[in-house]
Length: 102
Image 1 (cartoon, rainbow, N blue to C red):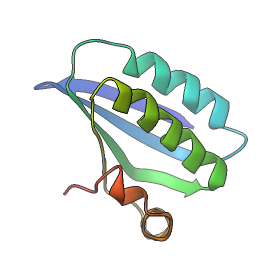
Image 2 (cartoon, rainbow, N blue to C red):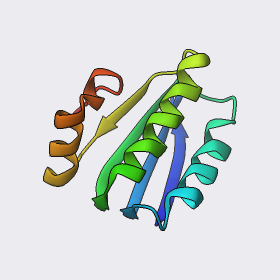
Image 3 (cartoon, rainbow, N blue to C red):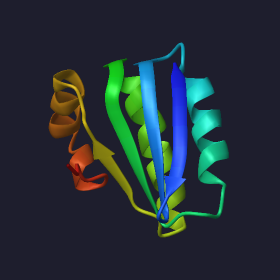
């Protein structure tokens, strides 16, 4: 798992690269928590275009980060999901809490 980020116009953009599963979940969680602790943004966009695979552990990581940011009134949006990720987000209702944007 590789995580790239940048802040632009009050938005934190995060690109997840690789696989988000039980083997990378802890690293991903710790890295996202560190990125999300910075004060320079009002919303987060998570780009899944380079995410090759995600399982239920990965969903848990994203939900946990959503809950932390919800407490701070900072919305999280998802963009560029693979067909695999798209299916997971639709089946689980994750788009209800982390809307998909174009």
